[in-house]
Image (cartoon, rainbow, N blue to C red; front, side):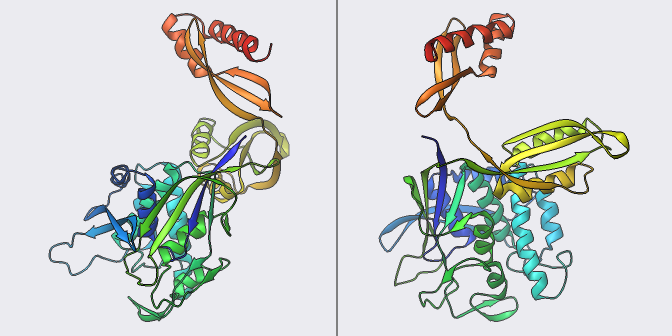
Length: 398
């Protein structure tokens, strides 16, 4: 049965950037890999640390960002959204990590700009502009993307109550920026007089969660606990993240994104396709069309999950000469797929098997395996492919 690899964020004690990192490291994402990824940004003056601790008897992981205070400087300078965006864009991080990190910062910038009656270009972050918040958001995005998830769900968020001290003085919980980021998200409070959901946590889960609900039907395969910085006597201050397999029912609900191009250097199309696939497109293809005034043109079609629509649309607008895109929902019915291994005279070749209602109806060799075998044998890849295809048909479809 085809399944979706799914994550469920259980935010009974709220959510913050460091709690997300802690839970994902506790799940098995290597902290060394996160550090290595973050080094691709021109960002210094910090140490990312992870340690195993216990909260209310539960083993968990606490991730902290230790800031190295510069000499002859009382505090780190506040950063603008523009400078953070430039920092991320100029890094060598994977394109999807860059795009998603910038989108999360943009969410925060928009609400901050509204609160202070200015624009996102002029807004300067205080708490969220610090090194620790940049590390939390970019590191958290990298960790989430490394898990190769199909779906992300979340519980309602415990926001806490009382007051929090910040750069603008003492403010009620949820703080104004957090409150705006929480619009449309179910929240509650258990009476704890602390800030349990931070702007960083609200922005990240608001960006990633497809739905806020009770735990969906899924087979749990892993779980992780990320510790918050505060001790709460009444319950463990932890973010719990569960990974599981959720069965796919019915056809896939997807979105098709399209744009027509008649004035772009053809050499750019390859780079655009690569960017779209890196950002999560399921399929990308080009069609030759005729536009107004009988101009030859190319239609770019991008098939994707609905949650990727905004990101992929912005890639088309940024990386092509298009002034607009269109999109519409589509349904897709797919075969259940398995990868089998077939011993052949050319070595072991992977075969992609397609199953419909429990019956194998397709058996296709993986082209890269055939090409590698052909190179070793110094024979045409067509011969290897045809021979292996015939063997696969005989084994699975005869």
